[in-house]
Length: 244
Image 1 (cartoon, rainbow, N blue to C red):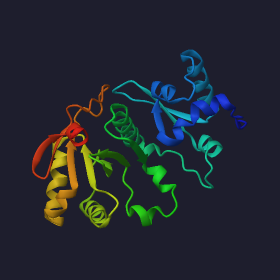
Image 2: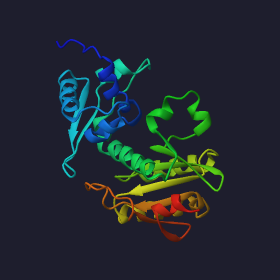
Image 3: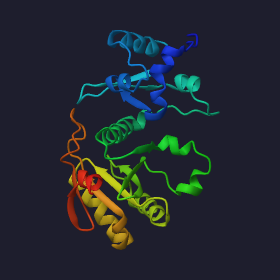
């Protein structure tokens, strides 16, 4: 049986960003470190942490990027929670994309801050304040008003009942000003719009935005051409955040 690896300050510098982002490609993780490490030494230590089962890795077949995330052992060593929960392999692709898109918005200055699902769950009384937990909450300010926008990434279709129940929760929540849904193709997006209108009516659509990110699996993950619609009008995702 392998001994538990003793984590020093260098290891903590490499691993701490994963407590916020959960899963990062290697170059993004290196940039997130407080002290930017030497490329060669960084990769050597990451391999050591994988060997000691503190980290687990995943190679994206489309972008060819190597991603790493804390194992249950690693999260147990870093987390202050009584019952830390490691990333689920069943939702790994989804969580990678939520993290990538959210960080891209931050890097572009489209949003001021972001909270991911696991961070919200860690808060006390989150059910009272939020009512419902999205994949992420995007925070930004426009014209002196501070917005709380729920982000939902739908890579596969939910059943109608589950979808409607979630929309009802958003309808009654006073915390979120809008909900942005992002889909990998227009067929899935249009089906969601159809079901929501049929089951919930059109008034709720004033709170929901729908966007299609057809290149979500590509290496570039470019957000400039992500298009959708809101209140019957076509618009780009960039227009939501860049309006003056």
